[in-house]
Length: 311
Image 1 (cartoon, helix red, strand yellow):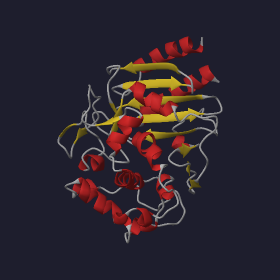
Image 2: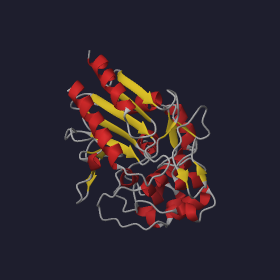
Image 3: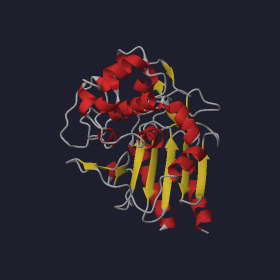
């Protein structure tokens, strides 16, 4: 009965979503409770932005020696500022790296981006600060130690892909840097400068593939707490723990955890209640300058509706 109710609620919510296109999946560990797509093809490919970090890079990086300094396991990091940083610190955002650096403005190749990232300033204070650079480096470490790119690893593990794509894609932004509408290629500029395959962004997925990949992370308890900062942000390895910048909405439980993507994506888990939610959208279409509040408010309404049905 909950499935029928949730589907009816979703149909109304999807139709009045303020984003140009949206897809939503609600799931338990055993099944998909409901799914729906509005203003996009049912099997369209969505730019996952920072969901790449947790669905592609994280599961591969967890196979690495988490507490070894990068300089001891990666020759290219030896003697660099990041050489003293561990994989655990990269994954928990405690490596003291900047949130991002616009390498794409001067880099002409993947090799140049990686070389610049290895020279990034590091301030190892133990404070957690969300960083794309940490996951960019984690992805490169995976590639060098495994001998396979994240594109091959993602396809094998979950079916998620990096461009080029086998089907229609949802457009993101009219990019002023590239001078064209971005569709079927990664929105993130640093990832684009790396050829489209990076540890922090670049993966694409259909709603069904992303829901299945997220479903594999839903357990009876949240991942263990690893780090925090004075702003109230708390991290496990990879995942944001509650309050997670509010991405779980106003009904989020203290045990909730998830991840967000800049283009308008979210994954949110409620382990105490046994369900999770995937939201895929292109809220930055046609420009990232659009007011984010309608997207945030709509996500809160959706997450509240799910909570009312499944708790």
